[in-house]
Image (cartoon, rainbow, N blue to C red; front, side):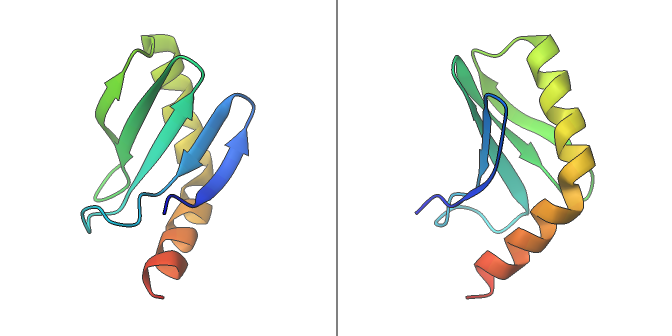
Length: 79
């Protein structure tokens, strides 16, 4: 299961339910994907087929929405 946390413009932010325990978020765009760690700091874990400009925009969005993402993570993974 990959619950969608946020759709923002062309980006879908989601979790993979059966993955590692370290807090992170996945992002899907029309041209590629990325994964960002959310702890201890927001950092790019890996990506596929996204430009530097898109990665910077995605990271900015994660910084803006990090409280919402962390709250959603805790709620989803405490079930």
